[in-house]
Image (cartoon, rainbow, N blue to C red; front, top):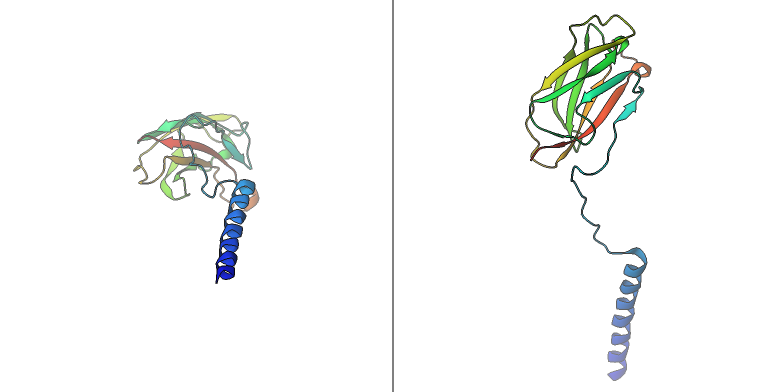
Length: 158
């Protein structure tokens, strides 16, 4: 009877030692919380485009926004089609919160920069503080090689 009890204790100790060593090697099982503060440094990303195609003055990357969001800047004429391109506001998970056309009253049939301004009304997402403003080049052809966008990470005001 004492031999069985001794073996049971050895197995329990071996299992405990295994988990203790595994934790030392791999770290804690629970990952640290993600800091969702606006103090993080983020930058805008260009997909199929550069800062020489479109310049966004407001909002800037990591800005905290509220509704209505005012977006201003300038884009080269080829960014527009019929004086319009699209603005999409998404939450942290990519769910579309708002989508509006961005229009200019200026002559867009040029290769020069053409100013734009749009107000985007939106309802703050119920979950998460992060989001992205996506400005999409007008692509009348529908061909993927003509797609372009600038993505600006933002934070929603609480």
